[in-house]
Image (tube, rainbow, N blue to C red; front, top):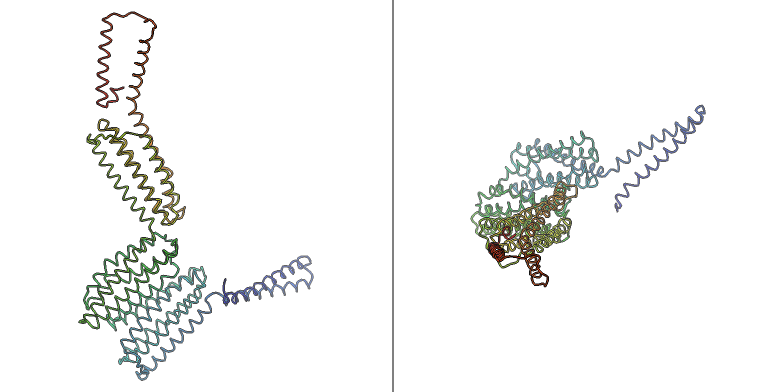
Amino acid sequence: DIGKDGQAKQEPVLAASVNTINATSNALDAAKGMASDPNDRNNNSLYNTNIKNLNTCMRNLIKTLEDNAPGLRECDEAVGMLQENELDLDHALVAVEASNTLPSRGDNDLEGFQEMMLAATQDVEAAADDIRHCSIASQENLGKSVIGLANGFLPLTASCLGACSKIGSKENKKELLTTTKKLAESARGLVEHAAKANGSTDEDIILDLDNAINDFRLDVQDLSRRLVNAVGDSGSLTTTIAQLERAANTVPLAPDDDDVSFMASIDKMTDDTDALNSNMPAVASSDPDTFVPALQDAKVVELYNGICHAARNAIHKSETEDSRGMIKASVTALGGSLVSVVQAGKTLQQAPNDFDARKGVVTASQAVNNDISNLKNALYISSKGVHACDSAILGIDNLISDLNTTAIFASAGSLSKTEDQFVPKELLESMTMVAKFQKQFVQNRGASQDAISTNVQKSFQSIEALVNGVKKAAGAIGPDERQSQILIVNAAKDLSTVMRDLIDLTKNAIGKDADSPEAQAMTEFYENQFPAALMAYGKTCKSLEDDLARGKRAAEAAAEAIRAEVVIFDSSEPAKQKSTAEAMLASSSAVTDATSKLVSAANNGNKEELT
């Protein structure tokens, strides 16, 4: 729905377009007629008439498009409003030059008017910040931006005239009026260039707009600097309050950079919030004389601007309404408490020995701490899945460290044998669970933060179960097979390391497009390194099973051979050959010797001798 205003602007454009289409059709028909009979004077006359009509329709269409382009009418209005402000300032300059007098204003004192000018200057600067974006990429909002800029000059001009009515020096009056008028002229130039650049892709026109914006900002800085010097710390604090309030008002707006990911915005907000939290104690404990420098050193405005800038993108890309609401509410509340701190500091400067004024700064600072805690909690909840990934990575690091310790004990032959049974099937089943839950985690990285948290927890629990199973298996094998212990422990450690790296890559790919470098790196790792690590672990388990079972199979084969000989001995079938007593004694001695070695090998767990 484009609304009534949009429909009203479309109607003349549509009418002019229809006229142009009809004129084009008539001109083509006339051209066909002339082509069929070039010597016919009537055809030539009709063709010329239709071509002239087409040219007229096209010129009318172009003019209609220009007249009804978004924001152009508002640009003209804004230029007119700014010219009126310039005229008021010119009249004041003439009056000062002639008699050094202006109508007296009793509604405020000099400092009050100067603080009003500072606040108004901040407002017009804020209004100008959005003009370039609207002119180039958001023309439908250009009109609102330029009217906002022009409206900001009404209180600025009024407070300037009020301040000059309280200044005695003729030169100081002229300087303030001239500087304010120069800013109004820069603003008018900015609006005029914005109108020219409206929807344009011409690099020279856009460069002219950028130059106009830079000139305007320099003039804003010039006037602000003069006003801050005039009103001292109180004026500086007034400026700070205006900057904080302006930043808070931007939170509901659309983001400046849509390419920044949700998690990058969360990380930026977290970093700036932590820095603000570290810097605020110095502000709370400062003296009246050091409050402004402490506020500046703490970078309160800079950090809060960064929080608000990142919050706009985070709110825009957040998955749930609850998350968006929490971030918006907590960032806005933090801005309010910061403003309260500055206001309390301003009161403290006016009454430096007042206990209540000092207490006000401390109380406001405590409110800031509470709002920072609330914001950090909102950020944590909004990125619950990513924090679960970090916890899983830390947990796997602990598992790897535990496996390293286990390997050291195994190498030293100090990993005692337990009563547990070595069951290779259980190790392979735990590997299957690792593969299952890791696949579920990777494939659902685009799910909600709650789902991501649940999936990564299951993934961690599966690798934790595998590691515990491996440690149990190493104890079951015993120190006599230390090489087997080391082999299985290192295989689990290698798989755990790959799991940790895969979770880290998946965390970095959360919220990213499938063709992003992070997502591609994760996919490549999951499709290559992860299967290779699973296969290596599975082969190790199978090889260890075969190795440990070799002696058992040899003993079973020997027992079966002995049973077969006993059956033959007990049968009624006559012997195939006769034997002497000496031969029987020699055979018995060999059996006794072999049995002794078998028992010794079984006791030592030496599968080579057992075989």
